[in-house]
Image (tube, rainbow, N blue to C red; front, side, top):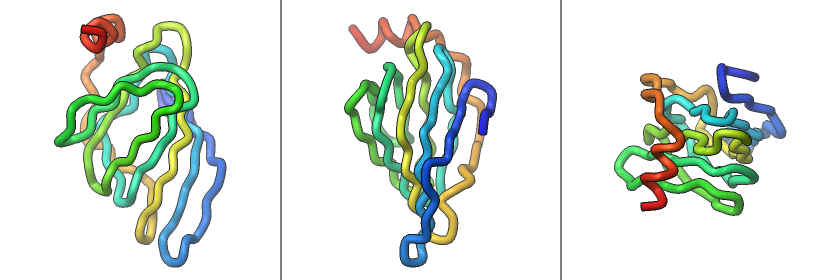
Length: 124
């Protein structure tokens, strides 16, 4: 599934004793972003490639780099931006929910972020 600057590829979908589990590879285009949204279930992901910034409601921003694993609680709004101007941000994401882990509830579009400014801000 492609939505603008984000491509999601379904890897696995399974019934986990009453909870749905969905595993996807998510790729965010260079300079792209994932809109602010929440999930009715748990969201876990592992960064494969690229560099990004994750903002989760109630937390400090998190730098996303290869090898980083992240956990987001149900119904917690979050968004991510790819800080790289010339390569994608790729993660493997696992959503685990009660009856349905997806779809996410998209609330508002993330303001257009300047990846160069975000890189500078993170390196300060």
